[in-house]
Length: 145
Image 1: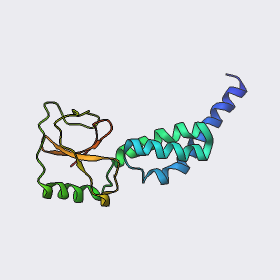
Image 2: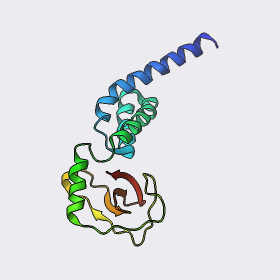
Image 3: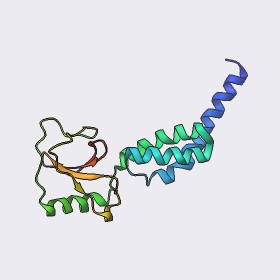
């Protein structure tokens, strides 16, 4: 590899580290993989242009996936809320996991109260488990345990 190639690689690594350092504090607040990717991409692009957007999106998705859609402190409160509502459980023949797309018909979806800060999602009770669902796709984005 010539000197210019090595310089490009070092610049890329340096830019990646810079974007990660600048984006991590705000990404810690990102909610879920989709929100984390969007937020990380915006923050990365502001900090380092197109390359920063790509790196920030990846970092944001990872952090968002760990954090989940609901904040850690909100999960127990939301779970209690759902139990108090006595919603019927929908029987689904397959495994309930993040990424599963639920059928459009027959699954009862409910609005998440505004105090939980996830207006883009709805919830359902599937096989006795509370799940947050993207209503546009029917995809489970979080299992609330």
